[in-house]
Image (cartoon, rainbow, N blue to C red):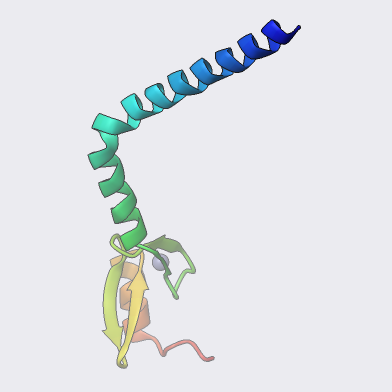
Length: 90
Ligand SMILES: [Zn+2]
């Protein structure tokens, strides 16, 4: 019984070592593109198109400063609507 317990502990140790080695192998060489992808995702928070209510990544949105306020749009159509129409009442 004692030996079995120690053996099991030993096997768990090997298992953890193997898992860590696999994780290191997966993320070691592949980490640069992974981190850059995460960085770009973090750098582009979601913004809302006030005209149609669509949420989109800030880097994909059309940016326009209207009445001194920075606003984002999903398409030139929405941007045109916001520029021609009055700003939404709040
Ligand atoms: Zn829109």
